[in-house]
Image (tube, rainbow, N blue to C red):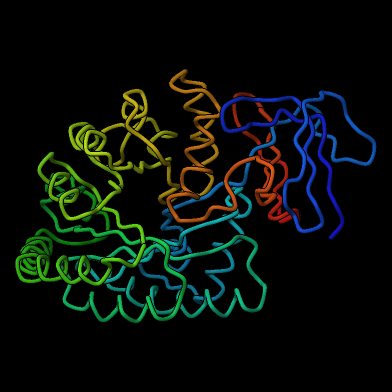
Amino acid sequence: MKTLAFSNFRMVLEDRMVHGALTLDENGKIIALEEDPHPRPGSEDGQGDWLLPGLVDVHTDNLERQVQPRSNVRWPSRSAFLAHDSQCAAAGITTVADALCVGDAGFESQRIQTLRDAVVDLTFLDEQGLLRSDHVLHLRCELPTPNMQQLFETAMAQAPVHMISIMDHTPGVGQHANLDKFREGRRGDGYSEAELDQMIEEAQQRREIHSEINRHYLLEKLRGRGLQIASHDDRTVEEIQRNATDGIRIAEFPVSMEAAQEARRLGMATVAGAPNVVRGGSHSGNVAVRDLVAAGLVDVLASDYVPHALLEAAFALTRMGLIKLPEAVQMVSLAPARMLGLEDRGALQIGMRGDLLRVRDFDNHPLLRAVWKAGERMA
């Protein structure tokens, strides 16, 4: 690959914005950043568009949505993975941690097959050079499940894992603390009241039997491994305190202001959902992420279930006047890259990999016009 030059861009750096030029070497690394508002012959003329680092996503469920586009439909796994990869690339996500469920909490049994297929597909497609974005795994370990340990061991042996979440989606706790809201959502899936009663009771029984055993297993298994461990859907101060005591340094998707405040007090990093920002609030009735951002309690945004929400959320927070654009962009690039242990990407900085986004502000909406990964055009 030859050197690439970009000029006449408004470049979003870590702490400021510069109208200037950027150059990549033949290996796709950034070798020059200059302040110069004029277009240069032979370069990509930005025409005043934004130039951002490629987005890094620490948590997306989007693959599951491609595998199961409807509740009673299962799509061929490899086809679904390629569609998911294309959607990530088209959303400007150059590095993505695919969040896969390890264990079935009792309501989505097909997620286990998605995990088994995905670890095989990721290895095969990556070896064939068919993926546009870089993919790693984020294992979402469901504590109240009897098969979690076996599934965890298999996934860890088969694919690159960069992050672990310890979670509990039992009705009546965490995200689903409001049982009336939980029932309302599940009625739409066709469950009767009697079926819901039985499923909730069985899920709560599994929690009593398996949660503490699986939590202890994971904490012991991961001790000294250097992998990032996150809690999930923390609601109370006590939950945060217990997690911090156990060495968990990330609070992922805290569902209350109090939990997020305690996480910050204890030095934990906080991940919040970008769709919550774009929609203006939580679909589950929990704390609004913009309120957490306004209080200075968010370090990283994740796409969760909508890949293009990452870019939109960064610009939305800026439009709201809650933070400046460089800080918002860090939440979707440099901060998540560091969280995943990736030191070579996430910022427009000399020596960094040339993952770049060309973005135009169109009617208060960030319009993604081009994506490069390590200097190669991918969208």
